[in-house]
Image (cartoon, rainbow, N blue to C red; front, side, top):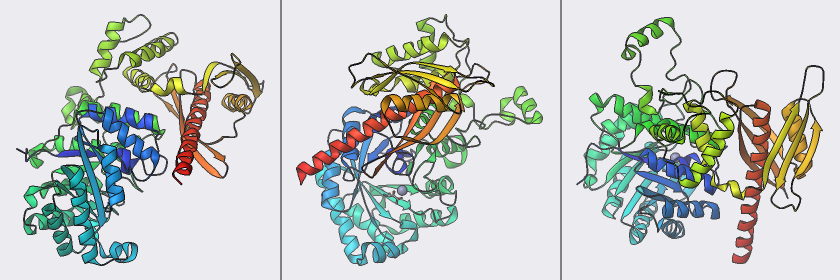
Length: 527
Ligand code: KIV
Ligand code: ZN
């Protein structure tokens, strides 16, 4: 029996989010993120678009094999090749889903598909039937639904449900609709589609007018019971419905909405931070729920009220989304037990391998920093979740920076190259600053021609002994092909964090180039 008041949370960070510029992730990163989504309690992970590339296929396949307790969906256009590829990719999932789509608006049908409405309707039904041969759980989306003729849209929804679709998703593909209108569209479908109760009605909103969350809530009020969303609201153009906003909206205003989700909300902040760390793109400070200022009260009147009773100016508790105040301060002398306890209360249970890496990083930080805050722990956790460490080509053995107001900055870097017989490689270089000198030294060692496109500094904790996190966009062009990656570096010293970040980017570039070469070889064999 379906719980009629439960909102199914369908996360598309790894598909709609990942396909947008600046958010691409490698397979290892997608796996780490998918595992965190499962911990967060999402119902469905849309893991990718398998037919699009070897990399997408492999990541959907790996997520299906390894991540338990969730449905894993693969996206497919309404044709046999796409659907069969999606079916193969999700085959090993505990709960496999195929999500197939075709446009329903006349603008798309005439100008993009160059077909008639009747032909498109037939393709939609055939796609659902094909997917149904592979899996029970089939989702169908009439793309650009909000700009479609309502009667035609209703006939398509009816036909795909009759063909076996278990979820029908109504996308506002171009972020055009407004809440009252979207409410009317969803209600119209409930009032006019016979058999609509046999499927879950879902919504997928884009944020071009900043209305994605509001539109999704309006659809819930009209009867929708699945919401497609992404962490931090990433996605095509202005993004998708932000998961943290929709989930906290539903929870905070359950008095009016009278629905619930299965999300473990205290995992929201760790998930948001993990995404930031993987992609190198931070959220703006005033971002609802997960922005740095979302729970910071600056005005004296507000501070006074919050101190007397938090409910005066806080509609949610910071701890509900995973911002917890430390009860005990951790440091150099803290025992393993206390640290593990703290990690557990932050919602993290690390594997033995991750734990070993975590404690190595913790020890090195605690030697330099007196007090370790939750933010520090969270940064170390995401660092220790990187299992690809042993696969990295370059490892930094030492960095020595010398700089002053009167003397030109000079940096010495010692690297270990997995492909070199030499124990370690040393270079010293000058530059306009310590980071610049360090990057020059790294380039001299590696012979890399990578370019630093942007450099972003985030001080994770307050105080002069803050742990610094640096993220940078780095590109390299090889045989006319441009590779772009985000590097990350964490260290108590800003300059060293910057240089670590550049080396991390070089490792990611090596990985990307290797993957690309492999794909080319596979293609050549196939030809
Ligand atoms: O925005 C959109 O219409 C989509 C579909 C594939 C659901 O992403
Ligand atoms: Zn979309």
